[in-house]
Image (tube, rainbow, N blue to C red; front, side, top):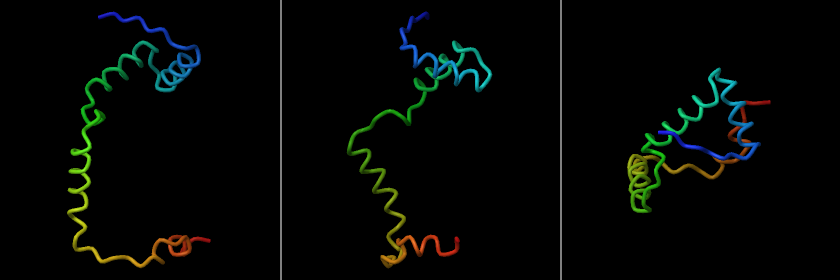
Length: 83
């Protein structure tokens, strides 16, 4: 399949620079990016219910964790071993 894209010059320049940085032609870089995008099921947007289910699953493992004191989140506590 052939598709013609009309890109802004700055977008084309950015993509060309990225392609050069990985050592492939621009066409190959763009085709690869589009294929990754098309095949990446994780990046598709889900419903709010799915998002909440994922958050609930993550939180499920934290039921037995003890609460931390607020001092644990202060900068001094986090970086106490650094000068």
